[in-house]
Length: 108
Image 1 (cartoon, one colour):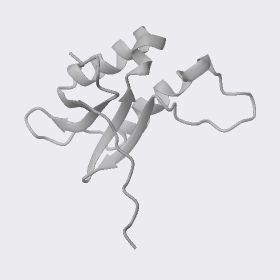
Image 2 (tube, rainbow, N blue to C red):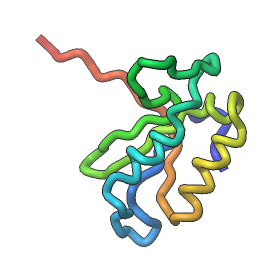
Image 3 (cartoon, rainbow, N blue to C red):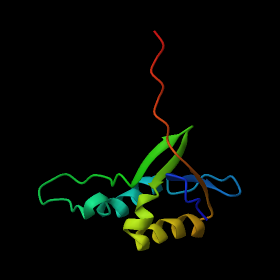
């Protein structure tokens, strides 16, 4: 269950038993499937480049592949939210809720 105050859910490419999830491009594949779901229901226009949805972004954190899923997806597209959460559960992936904080400016 995701807390109503969390802004993002981090699906980590590590199973509950600590094994690295395979295939190695799982995060990009999942985010690619979710790329059509975006704020305002925007659709990628013909001729434009495909881009990840801001609601579902693959990244690497501390050497681990992660998909960051914004909780706004839950309200805007409940079936898409369920798909992502079931993917994590079905593959026994670690899920952590939280929020990304902006980087601190470098001290002079």
